Length: 395
Image (cartoon, rainbow, N blue to C red):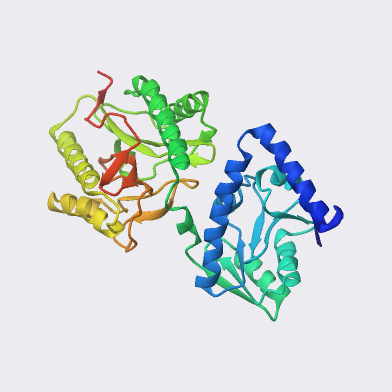
């Protein structure tokens, strides 16, 4: 059901020679192949360290973000099988040549049927006794199929491979910074159109258009535009509702650039503002600014969350803040580490996280203010630069 593309090339020395020639051609074509190969070799080394710590002979990587991170392959379907000495990338016909360019250090395996069956074939050929799989990604049906195919060997569900992606390189941070700048500029372009009578969906469409025309590959997620009572919905995807006067409008948006996401939320107000609007907004802004001031490497996610949660509780809005303070952002818009009451992990230097406290009052409205930051040893660097003072629109 599977075969390596290299199998037909000839003796090992000839295979190596042809791989080198192919790599050199790609260097001239891309100008960055050596750098990319070194980067993914380092990531592969760190992945292999998990073999020992997890007591398995092989790791089967199925989550697309982890697959891209370790291999460089950006296709929509694939499985990596990694052992201490070998690294295979299981693919269907559509991606064989793409993988040759993007993942030259991996042995390509052409799956003639389901990818999981071809991955099982690799495991059996390598005489793997214990194969670790990503517990949060591999469907139970595929898990059972893999287990049946390699018996009496064992399939071991594992957690925690995502943490390989927590600490970002300077190159990753630069890409996320670019995505954030694109989103900022798009929002500034769209802001004048946010007024009483405007439709939520139209604002979302225009925001997506402005991000794309500035270089975004696509939105990082479905854009949230929630006005009036709907702004009390933390994930109120844009609807056909028309914005009314004296209403909060929460806009949560991000750009995807070269596989990396940005994430930002601003809440604006259609005139006229009331004292209640100003008071709720001020409380959320205070909680966000205090969290940013406290955030640094070495803290736990739980500790940072407690800063915002404590201030909002003290102001009487603790029950109105029902989600975590933030989450990691990178190849996925929601990844680790999290800033939540349950996150015991220590935040590393180079992690990129959102900081987004909110207050949601059903039937009336809500406020969320979100920035994206890079964590440093002595603080954090904010990547989103839109104003956070209360903006009254439609005046």
